[in-house]
Image (tube, rainbow, N blue to C red; front, side, top):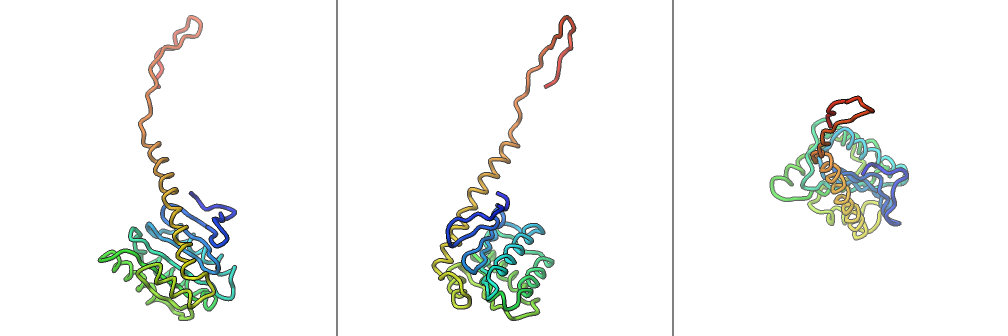
Length: 204
């Protein structure tokens, strides 16, 4: 599913800006919600940046940013780590806080937290409060104290709603790829005749 225009509204709290098999971006109150499920690339990063910019523009007195990194997401490369730091810094006080939920456990989660930590190290501004948490609940609870956003419970529910869109998107893409991969049924050879002229055997 590609970005919708105008943006799709699921309810009064959640406005979906973009959703595909890799990334989902939405607005919930004064918060920008981003869920990463795949690798960070040029196009996907731009969709995140554009979505965050839109939410910050809609809430100039201070927006919040909740970034959820699922265990299937791939860590960004150095270029996108630096670009992420610059993106957050560019909004100054207009971006009140960034809560980053790095899901998973063990080595995978430690790699994800390390990647986010590397982003924080190259920041030049400290006007946006940032917290790295292990769950959406912890990140949302912290954010509710730093920005005028829906309650932690409502923010969690918005993340669940946005997350629920992924299966439909993934299944639709899988079905399309499956159809493309299916072998085509060969068309039997036949003889075509026009009047008394034999056109010969035609390939399928």
